[in-house]
Image 1: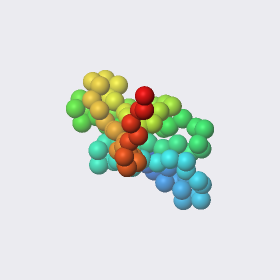
Image 2: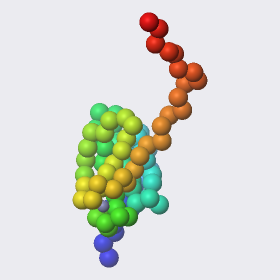
Image 3: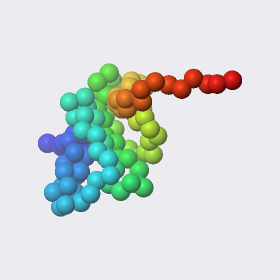
Image 4: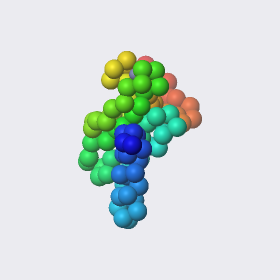
Length: 96
Ligand SMILES: [Zn+2]
């Protein structure tokens, strides 16, 4: 039986790690139906997801901008959203 794209991509990343490769970024959200990583910092992200809304599964590569978000390409459901980094304490008010 064919493996789903999400598990397959996870195995691909784990195989690189097992070979001692450095991985620039990795997001393991398999329980939410998403796995993505990029090998080298200049690489595009390899993204695999299974949408819980419409059941669409997809694999694609993309340049993501921070904060990373991935929407289902079929129904536009938000599949992944990177947690915001904690904001530094106190915001400077604009001085006029
Ligand atoms: Zn969807």
